[in-house]
Length: 309
Image 1 (spheres, helix red, strand yellow):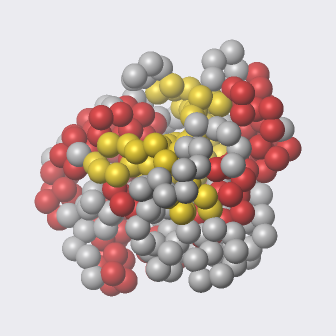
Image 2 (image 1 turned 180 degrees about the vertical axis):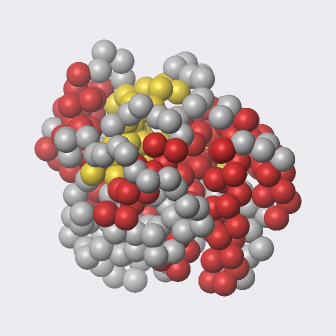
């Protein structure tokens, strides 16, 4: 795939950390900056986690804080999986870097408007920052190559029978983005639940033996302990890096072009990504939805990413 200039909008988060790891040091991907919102933890905590990761990986990019709340809902966090810090399991050195002076929405608008090449937006948390940028400056759609998101599901959710966490945390934001006219590629639970960090995966990555694998393995051990306690799984699904793996090698997933609508009814299916997989409604397609993933290829991509550090 051609060189991609990306902004990574995230809420670190154990799986977000691995997405940052991949995006920050992969040929063919130019990580322009990171924007942060609440999600896996509050904005103060996810922001600090993003700074810690950028410093640890030696990335010379801006980190911009977003708005602290969803568009309508109250803040929801996922401390049962990601812990009190949002990134439990690794002791980072003292921070010596700080946030960029621009807020996330300002940074997204400014960067997309000024770029001579189209920008790919990758979202691995709630879509609040991007939605607000599209509301404030709808013309930026013209310079967005693609929005690649981790979120949603065409089957069941993981925080309600209908909804996945990233979408349910701010359904109105997702509704705005899905209706924006951007090219959308959705990595939902249907594929991300298949890439499990089983004990043999942790053992495999430990053999890499560098700073990236050290962080990966320490984080994943705590991540898996929490997944085991909450869901009974031996290995947690490493959701977010599927977005970057797709940009590295699109053949890692199989996509279906469908119409998707976000349920903002505030009823029992609030936050559902209603993907018309059988094309019942004959509506215009607006999203590419991942329906399968090559698990072996995915872990090969993760290992290669670790080895580049």
